[in-house]
Image (cartoon, rainbow, N blue to C red):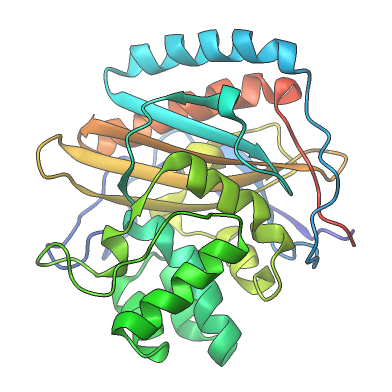
Length: 300
């Protein structure tokens, strides 16, 4: 399995200017704080079948849960995470904290981009939608699938291929001023399961590579982890109806032996800045506890 490594300095986002009609796109990258070094996956391996999963010792999960509760409490926000080995499903014992199924925001652009690539091939719109989280480009992808029910079915089909058996992408607008697909309700365990199967999906490799090259407005959460050999992420964020800002991320990180772990996490109840800070705190906890996490790989 060949992985092209590229070291880059990651600037952790402090803020995000969100237009009413944008939801998860920014006109400029946020101001950076404390640069860290992250290795980014640019050419992940192609594989379509999951290999047997090699989990860490389940006896360590109780200690992980206790550690997560301490970190989550320190953020002052409502925080949740689901963890899965690549090739497997979310581990119930490692679905921790907030379990409320919440709006996907721009994390749903990953299955959207996969669906569009399967139908139309790689495109500049997919690159902009994933790397920059550009909503206009994501709308182009949605339209390329036929829009409405046709597009919703195509993206939902990708979720099913990725092991998510329950999430349904809407066909009509649920909230004025925001994208149809961005208002998909995506529970963290379902998002983690999909992310864990993403490297094994046919036609997903270009999108996965783009997730390893995200712009500054998404270089937080898993991106601040120092221990992984490589990382790939997609962020999502937007104002809640009653609970303040929701900040989400799906991500993959690679161990030295090539096995990978998938996560889906969220923080709600504060601002964009405090939500990012909360997910950075959770990711620091993940970094410290990497050896305890379940991990897996796809068959060649």
